[in-house]
Length: 331
Image (cartoon, one colour):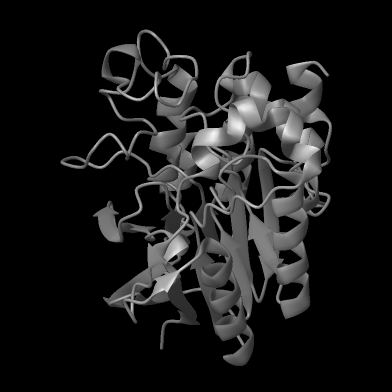
């Protein structure tokens, strides 16, 4: 499938949106911000908005690194071997007991169901490689909770290490072949989930870059009066942070790529980010209806604030870690 056809193949989730025109920054700046305030206590967050929403509690889950496989994956073992051996045993973030990634995922979902969580936000690297067995198992666990969820891919979800092809090509291939059920019929690279007056917006930045269609999609949503929560795998650049915060990082590029050999993939782009990626970064921090950004990738919990917008990075669910986030209207 041609890349352009792949990107444009899905409708915009019934939102009545069109692509191709960028929203002027001046128009965004004239809109009143829907953000109010937020607070954090360990892995628990409260986020308030001036919009009228129904109180909503979500679990943010990222970087579980499931590596279940079966005979269907045997022909890919040359490419999955290293990550199949990773994260076999992990230390639970609270109890300090040893847990497998399957146990971590199961415990997190069980807790979400027991505590009547409203929504699950999955921000990538749920899988260590695109195993059909792992996708089927994870989807079964998610469906059994009967809790609505959103999923956006991480850089490991679609990557068979050493397989020929660019990152863009490999993401397209395995999002279509093996990861497809996780998208619930929505577009793999950009999608929205409406819930309780909130809009959870998935933008796949798992190649570290943003495509023009993704930028246009986000800018359309940023112009609405609905408060949005942005879900991505790789955190947006924050001054003083490591290269893990690599999306729109001015130091990102071929010279700064230290892991391409061990991950057996193409080097990052020579010359750094595209203009589109940098324009996306600017658009995010100008969006008056953006309540916050949820990301993973670094395996460390952190929070940064830029222009009043909080970026909350959750630690890896391989240790059963999750972020417990409550959204409410500001009193």
